[in-house]
Length: 166
Ligand SMILES: [Cu+2]
Image (cartoon, rainbow, N blue to C red):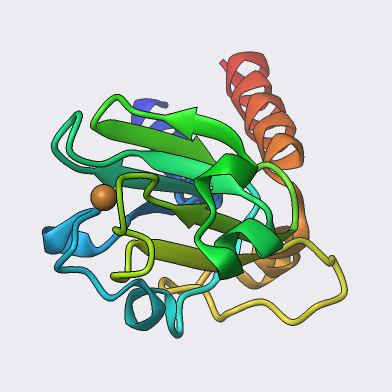
């Protein structure tokens, strides 16, 4: 019976979607992007970053860049301490590990003028997580605590169920 099958598919999709969409893409500085006009302390305030989320740095190529740097290099605005330099003008960084992450612009005095961003990526499974923006089904509420790869496995299993059912 086709309509019953449709309902089953819809139920599965409704269950999977909130899980997939829990990875957030953050545009650093929002409409201002990565520039001298940004206030990245204010921008990061109140945001919850987690593993699987990503940061997008939008800026004019060759006018700015993004350095992944240590906490000391961040404090001193010292580009020589950079672990990695990104310079495409639209750099996407996927947050793969928990803990503090520091980013600065390496051009002249841009860092001391405010082009510096520090975030804390949550990764402790026991730490309280922010409430989901859309109410998830109760049985899946615990999935907030799972890693991104675990969620992918869950999605794959659910899709497998669809094929078995039909
Ligand atoms: Cu800059």
